[in-house]
Picture 1 (tube, rainbow, N blue to C red):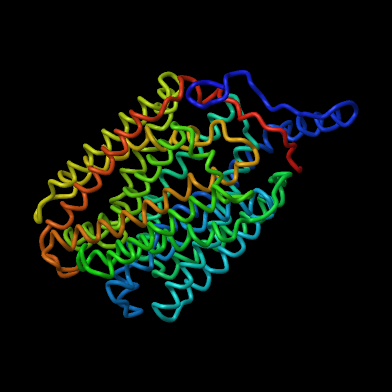
Picture 2: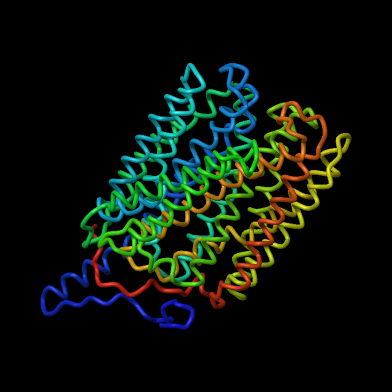
Length: 508
């Protein structure tokens, strides 16, 4: 085992059996990765499409929120929970969803998740009240928590090592990294021409494609040693994150209020209880060994920072474009595209840099560049133009994040054993969503504080937006410091890092 916790190059899975059964299991193991290349890449297409839908649903209603609020009569607090209900349910249930996918079957979990996700999307699109919409969004997030880790862990199994793994994770990372911005643009188009309800109903054709693609191209795999789902661990982590985010939401009215302090303390206490439960149970939703590798822990932190910026700050970006710059939903949606376009345009460059220099330097530099872009955005004025004050900043943020979204999931999942693939994949997704929900709550508190207690629609200046962008820059710089200190992946790890040694044969 290498000092950085990763398996030395050339190490591979070992089957501890003998005689004829050893030969049969070895053949089954080899054949599980010997699918024709077109089938493997079709599997990647299905999984990537699923991840795109999951990620863009965190932001697709952002541009539509003014229309949603007017039609359904939402209060400002309810308006925020249209987004928070989704990302909070998604993030807090992901760990349990990943463990269920590992033991119940990843393809089976994928199918159940995408059907439930589509049904909840239909309910939200037809909602007659704000409460109905918020509940539907929460259910969407719950099924996404089953769907996302199943999809990502199948990707880990389909592409276990080699250059194909690097290519597959680069494609997946580009899709996942640009999903939030694509959601803003698509939300603007749908709101302008079809109405806000289609921001949810648009998921239905993707649901059909996902079901058909899973039946045609995805193979079943699961662990051979699952004994339970760790219900108490799942409950404690869900309630812990829920209490923590709700406490941060209450911070809008003051960080020292009794309710804010009580919910923050309750959340931290429940998360501490979760750690105790995981250290003692035989089938944890989060095996603590996943977090003991410093590189993996650093990658998880960086992914949380990306979620904070993409989900938390882009909401205020949409408000700034519509309320301060007076852009229509359509133009506001398209005005966010430079971030996604620059991320995708630089993805191939970031992949080559990652393979040559390793994750530490590429991710650190990318986060610093993205922070510079956020600081540029913080210089906006009331009468400033989009092209002078917004466009350059979005380009910088997108270029910087391309150095993060390409390698981060590969780094986080390198060396993970097959039995932990679902749990580790869940953490990768979970920290991004939890980071986004925490970022949204903190940025809202920063906005209201800097605006003198005024809400988004009452604020006539730009002080609140400046505070949000500066807060995002600080988060990105913190991520850069962690990446520089903890991440130790060697050069070419994207294409050569093998999977951690394990003794279990996948069920295909």
